[in-house]
Image 1: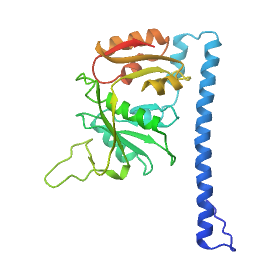
Image 2: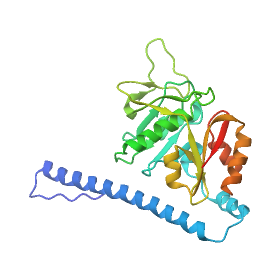
Image 3: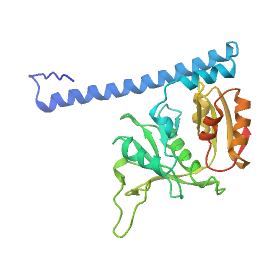
Image 4: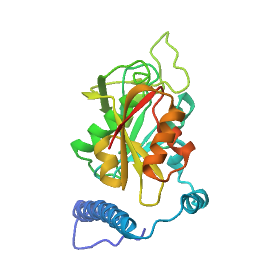
Length: 261
């Protein structure tokens, strides 16, 4: 990037000028992201009034669409449009924290065994309380607490520099495990999720508020007695589209119950 200095100003004044410009650019970026989300919602509305497309054609479009880096993980868009990405297992937890977490992101985790790490990709902006709560809820819902029938648990947010692979003396951290140091912004959240179709027909699962914000059709899911494969078939039938394997991959670990819109 080319930097032009005003010789009439001091170094500090020039630095302050560029700092102010950077803040304005970040604000514009957040506004652009919100505009994209509004545009997607408008597309979804148009889809409702178009002649129905066959499921085979929809799946063909999805199959040939380029995959995003985050699609190998668990992911959803928060109500405010922030990308939230979570690990699926020890290997993807390790990869997510080490390779895809920037210094200005926010990390979410729980103390439950088998809990994923979720990362809020902030792009240097400050997500609101609703995004933090949604990431906490997703983190708890995708933990082994779901399979154990836990209805609520504490989930917390920390800064990336609080997460380290350095174990305490005499301890060993296995793959996907990290030490979290310092103050934690914790809240009790319920274990429940929703699943739906984005305007481009990709399957997205996450907290109800986030899914209903971005998806044109949604289903609520809770802990239950249906096997993931059986629940996925019910969800696919209601949604009228969506790849069955993608739906299964989006479900939490353990049996589920489809409880409606």
